[in-house]
Image (cartoon, rainbow, N blue to C red; front, top):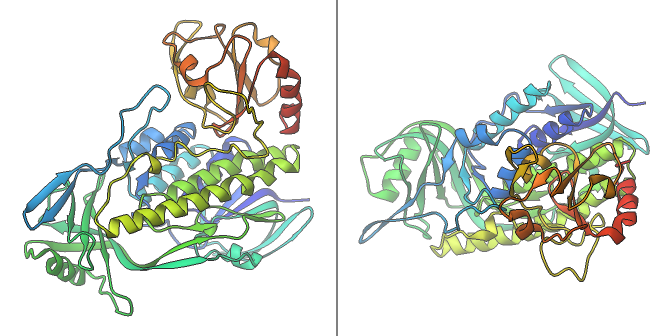
Amino acid sequence: MTDLDVIICGAGAAGLTLAIDLARRNVAFRLIDQAAHPFPGSRGKGIQPRTQEVFEDLGVLDRIVASGGEYPYQRLYTDDGPVDRPAGLLPDPTPDEPYHLALLVPQFRTESRLRERLAELGHAPEYAHRLTGFEQDPDGVTATIETPKGRETVRAGYLVGADGGASSVRKSLGVAFPGKTLGVRALVADVRLDGLSSGFWHRWNQGTPEDVSLCPLYGTDLFQLQAPVPFGVDVDLSAGGLTALVRARTARDDLTVREVTWASAYEMNARLADAYRRGRVLLAGDAAHCHPPTGGQGLNTSVQDAYNLGWKLAAVLGGAPESVLASYELERRPIAEAVLGLSERLLHAAMNRDTRRGREVTQLDLGYPDSPLTVAVPDRDKGVRPGDRAPDAPVTGAAGVATRLFSLFQGPHWTLLGHGGDPDVFTGPRRGLRVHVVGWDVLDTGGHVRDAYGLSRGEWALVRPDGYVAAVGGPEELGALAAYLDGVGVR
């Protein structure tokens, strides 16, 4: 017997995303964090296009966009004068990829918007609640939590450690966290500053030990200050100390740090947990992988861990086979490994004065073609393939109202997208599955579904709750479709 379905340890971006996903699935959980207050800093400030799609599904994207903005032009101060250039060179949005630019939103604002969404769903993080120990058995996890009112013992079906790079959950599990230090020590601080325009990301001495940058944090009156600092030296993170550093590196005595709201000096690491799961305890976010900040990949990978995990926990708690949850590590760990490699490459490029970003940072091309939940179609030569991210497309409902595939996918359900014919041909009613048929209740007025999915009459694509294509088939595969849905708990 358990008190809860899930305990989430850590109320950062990963923990909050998981909590929102579980809340909308009516899963009983508690979200705890040992800190007395929410994280106050800007550290993970980049929201990549794929994470924007996740936030749209969770019902929070518009508020997060309104809390920040697009990345400003970089103003590089050179011996020949300032040079302005865009932070990235990416194409315009398309019908299948509606978001194309990274957003600049300070982490504390992103997490605030996630807490607001969680509150709308009837939940809130519990701060000053420290997980002091846990034991697991085949039926659940017994956790001990120190709270402001004393010690609690709580029984849950699963425990998720989303408690950061120094994760106590990971350490208690005995999961190794191999990797390497990257030979770079840096400071990052949120400051109020006199003397600079907030219209640019200002950079001096790029790629040298005297590098310093000041990036405006849109939606606030703050700048994020970043600079490499020497090893073995105490760094003065006060307003006076940072003013002295900025003036020395920019040769500008008109720049004054008036206030420091948050600051940290840290050593860059790249690490990946040996395992994402031991029994009924799982790891997500920075507890499972630690990135250098280059390319804005860390927070995004963490959010997508949680988005992958949420529906699988809910499915297994609802009676789906254990194999559904087992796919979490098989899908997410290779993604983190690849993203760590990308972050390191971008770090080395930045050290050589190349800060350009391209499509590789958007995370739109990540997928799960080798997942055990993906039904391979080796001879498919058009449209989407199983394992791909499910594209968006503008469509018109049969009643004449314009909508999008993403609006049809939004929510904690699977979606079967068929082409032509009566929906009953594809499958009968199932809890947790919505069926839409192009040419019946959805009209492909612009041909965008055709272009993105490549479905012929009688063909279908099955889209997972996290927006990835699980299977594609035709009339002859409908029997296999029914068996697949049974196997993932959609009955």
